[in-house]
Image (tube, rainbow, N blue to C red):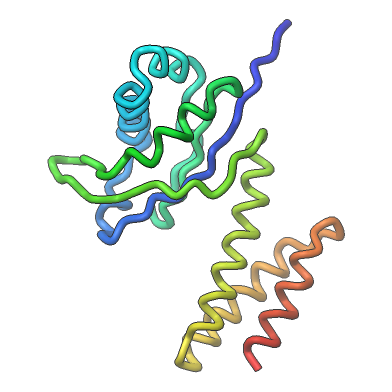
Length: 169
């Protein structure tokens, strides 16, 4: 029995209009990526990527998307993502672009990276906030995320909590 290996592309959909993210659907997004691959790489790219391609995770509120494709052809998908400049949904056209955050071999590695990425983004927000109310809300979010994932293998959880406390002072 032969196992097909996949690659997972963790991407962030960046758009100025919040309605763009809220109108996301995995079928629409998958079709958009497939059409872009066909436009950029032709029929070979469309055929090569259509076999194992799937949208595995989609969060409409944060704009995080997890795309699965075959290991041999993940670079075709990756290279086609910058050519997506707009999203058409329900008769509206929203300007947007994809920011590839991580390429991993399993969903679990992508989840771990996403947790670390979100913690770093929260720390950046903490350092840039001007009001004490905002600072307290972000500090609470950081401490909550550090308490939920307390594993000895992850050194970042301890350092993030210390950095958050130092930045708050």
